[in-house]
View 1: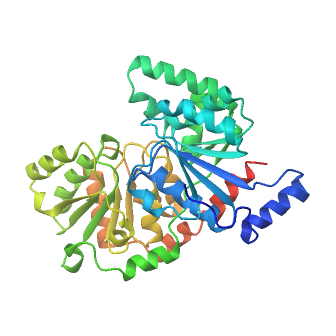
View 2: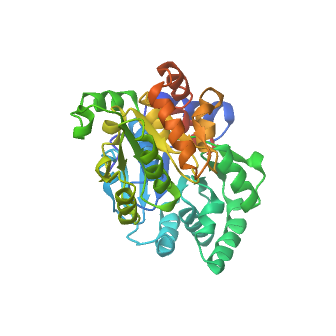
View 3: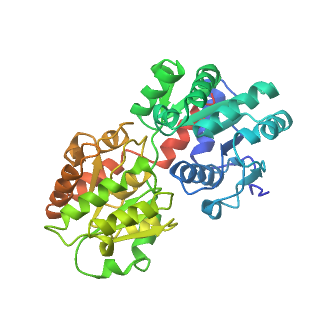
Length: 393
């Protein structure tokens, strides 16, 4: 277990928040924040939770990071100031008993929870332990698509649990307005009671470090545009559509594609690239911890997903001042990020011809850096952290 160096903090923006909470809102300040996520897997939710934990702890607030299993590449990013609590459970449902015991024993005040099945586990544990913890649950993707991936019986059971338990949370958050509307409909919660907290872009110092690092791939030192995509190799990301689009793009541009991520579809995608004659111009890196090193050197970032809540990699690319193309997918995350100023960068889902046409257009006439900077400035880690703390009052 890791221990915070300054358990109750004495400086920074969080101190101002605690003073305001005590004297102006009339509530007790938050002295310990707990964050609960299944593991340190390399997904967007896990990455954001690690960043939030490091931010809270770095601001002087005692922070505990609860995981079902201490597994995954992102654990190396967790600050030594954060206390790590492992429940030693393989899945969220297996963690129910141990989380119940933890809540009963530790009596936490604020617990921020992420991902659907983890949310349900935490809500059940609160009921079983009769905990008075203020549970803030976070939905990071389209609940309707999460449910659609289950068999009918499991889908019915999970849907029933969501409708039963989500209204019992102290607060429900979503990463985008589209996700919030989906949660409201499925969980039976008024939309006005769901708080939208977008994911923050990377820190400027991390981007600067990425620019100073050695190029992570030899293609960045060669002629021709390099396109980057990031995400697990699963159907949701529709990399098959992106590979089809690349084949069309290469009829006019000598572009190459680097895909950062791992997953069950790699063999099928590799075969598709071979069939379309682009095998030598598509590279799968596997999971990449240093994704910013790729983004800062990319000529274009492309998101080809069927649905996205608030895609971290898209806002990361924008913060790195990289032109982007994205599908106008369910969840509305890309549309909300790009806004009216970059609406032209959106294309229909599952349309390789439209995707290829927009990719060529962006490569020929990239968007101005000022437009990308304006979007990135709308979001920050400080703002997201403050939102979660305000929900505890």
